[in-house]
Image 1 (tube, rainbow, N blue to C red):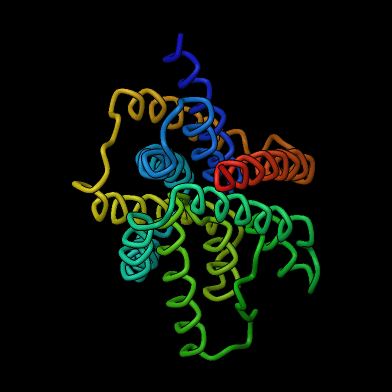
Image 2: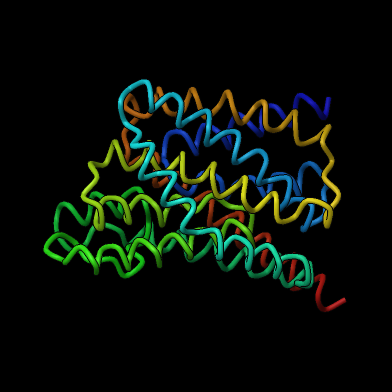
Length: 269
């Protein structure tokens, strides 16, 4: 019965990741912790496997549709190695309840950025509508060196978030690719999934040997996530983006409030 539940959860997480290109992976940790019953640190580690697999599957779907720039995507991921290693190291020593609380606050931040997305012009609004944050990136007109610096900053931030929280960070990657590298939105969404898979592998490698990974749980959840991501990437064009984003934001806020409250109660006992 639990295997069926894990498959369904994986389908939901992977579908959100594939359709949105950013933000969907944030669902993996609460699913693994509160439904699968894993500890916070195991959940954030197991999330890397599921998120990485789902992102790679989604990237393959986008690749065959011509929406993935492989060279730039791999480079963006490699840029974040330092951040991934740092985030993974901090995850190992962080108090589990504090980590849970920080994750809840992080979810609120992501949801809030998605709500206020849309200001600053059509191109900027288009990037923010999927990504949720501009990470201080400038739009067109910047010098090549300035854009390169912002890509390094964005890559490091994404790597850190992946290493510390076990999330993909697509909400940072998509705006970075659009605003700093002049990607089209379809190419940014597709390429962001490749970057997420690269970051997930790096962060998982940094954690191996330090955290026990329940592979039976992870593989079932990842299988569902992988299929969900393929379906989500194919179905993205058939959904109304605004309605999908609103529903996703409501879900994020609800989960964040629950997780934050639970973390505080645990810390007080």
